[in-house]
Amino acid sequence: MGWMGETIDSIKSIQIRQLLTQAISLGMIVTSALIIWKALMCVTGSESPVVVVLSGSMEPGFKRGDILFLHMSKDPIRAGEIVVFNVDGRDIPIVHRVIKVHERENTGEVDVLTKGDNNYGDDRLLYAEGQQWLHRHHIMGRAVGFLPYVGWVTIIMTEKPIIKYILIGALGLLVITSKD
Image (cartoon, rainbow, N blue to C red; front, side, top):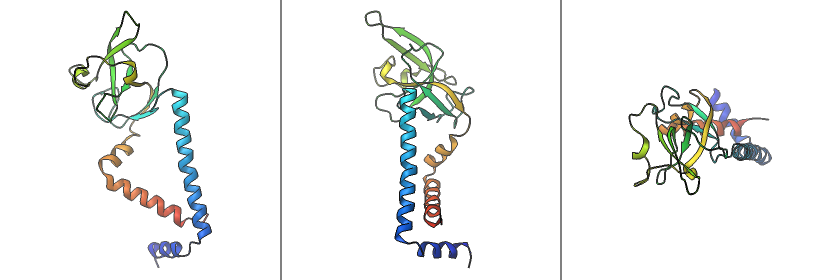
């Protein structure tokens, strides 16, 4: 009897109490991950404290698959900073550098114009129709650190969903068949 037969026998021998214990353990792991994410949101002041670079628009500084750590403070945004922003009508955040800052005289609020380091022109074509500048509420955070290539896991699972389902299935099977 091979590995598959042992796995099937293990699944058949699961008792209700063991199944409940494993389900509770899995629930605790998921809950812990959510708590850690919410804590990071509070500490960094960003709605998304970690993002993956999805395109090559910021090369050579950041490559596709790099993970960025974000922080959002009350300090004014300055030209040269790398920010992550959301544009009205788009679901995916964009990572680009601030190239111009425009301070409004009447309110003192700062509007910014961005550009990808590897792009020819500014991002006005990416903004919502008629929008010339990004406002503070569009900015999700400033890049304060990065891990190269680690985000490829996310990119692969997004672009090839079958891999995600195989991985989730394998992990679920591992949880169900574990004896501890």
